[in-house]
Amino acid sequence: MTASTEHPLGAEHIAGCLELSKAANWNQNEADWRLMLAIGYGWGISLADGTLIASTLVLPYGAFAWISMVLVLPEHRRKGHASHLLRVAIDELRASGLTPILDATAAGREVYRQEGFRDTWTFKRFALQKRPTVATTNAAGPINWRHALELDRDAFGGDREWLLRALQKRLPQCAFGAPDGFVLGREGREAQQIGPLIARHERTALALLEQALQNVAPPVYVDVADHAWAVQQLLHGQGFAVQRPFTRMVHGADRAPGDKNLVYLVAGPELG
Ligand SMILES: CC(C)(COP(=O)(O)OP(=O)(O)OC[C@H]1O[C@@H](n2cnc3c(N)ncnc32)[C@H](O)[C@@H]1OP(=O)(O)O)[C@@H](O)C(=O)NCCC(=O)NCCS
Picture 1 (cartoon, rainbow, N blue to C red):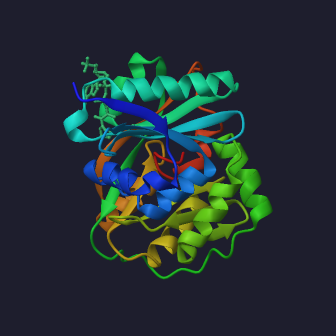
Picture 2 (cartoon, rainbow, N blue to C red; picture 1 turned 135 degrees about the vertical axis):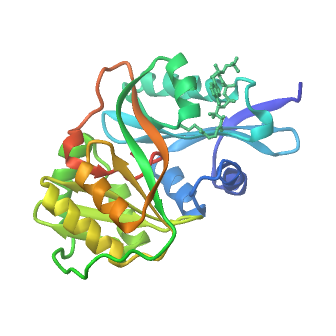
């Protein structure tokens, strides 16, 4: 067996981190890894030659923390690396009194179930390869941060102001607000991603999404809650196709924090 060492992840590991997410065909770019390491912290496993072969991050959001970027290089899978780093993360969060939460891929879900995570609600990634053809709309305006943060606390159940303000800078042409909703986005390695989209009413969610779609270049990803039927219809009408499903899972609780009915698009499985 090849010798490997567990260690904290820092800025010096960003290149290795990018190789990990690229190897899994994920959308994160360098800015995403830097953002997540600024909001949270993590652990890696490296070989003696310095190759990073596994990662796991945690992003604290108040009373709970997101477990993120659970990745293992393809040739090093099924050797217990993901389960090991996951246990390190769970122990650390439990010691700090934080509930671990995450959004699982189908492969990840099996690992997490064995470590005691339970399913809550589900969502799917939709992808579009061509330019959207939504009607021109100017219904939404700039984000009112006081309203947006209050709404996000109800929807998400935690405090992620730092993240939301960072996303506004990442893709300002997709950052819009209404009295009862907001949408943000970011650029990625493969595609621009729209989300989170949080709203108190469906009509607001649809108007915000249409306005954001006007301002993105293809390819585009959106992670849509399975309960957001009207949004899914709009996306199918635009030619979006379902790429893959995700399950929101919680450790030591039966339900996810917040109010899922206010969540139309999640920020992304790595962010919540
Ligand atoms: C999912 C992933 C992180 C698992 O990493 P890993 O180090 O291979 O996982 P482990 O060796 O700790 O697996 C522990 C157990 O989980 C289950 N498991 C792991 N990968 C699985 C898969 N692809 N399908 C079904 N079960 C799986 C198995 O029961 C495994 O035990 P076993 O090998 O003795 O049968 C890795 O496949 C990966 O990087 N995938 C791409 C990215 C991804 O989907 N990450 C999860 C994000 S939510």
